Image (tube, rainbow, N blue to C red; front, side, top):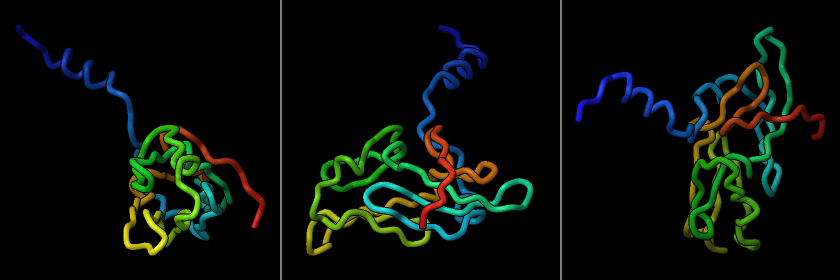
Length: 136
């Protein structure tokens, strides 16, 4: 069977996109914080140099393996499924951490800089855009 480069390229183009192009999140956003159980809030720089504060529902971007291991997944609903009483989620810089037990000996970390990007002031992940936010 003979395959051409066009056939192979077309096949690869049909694969689903599992992660947004990222890497500019931490470098172009500030005042980043987490509102439990599932919201990421950040003020990100727009193309015109001004700043915009938005909030992203991370249930749209993160899934859960077992009871506490985080991974990038479109509409993964991790924070709906995260068991209550294990400490929720914590954010430091762009790294979100969840714990598998109350004594915090088991943990899962996910670097949001690998999956969240700033597009003209809005946070994007897995094709989902954040919404403007005026809360604290």
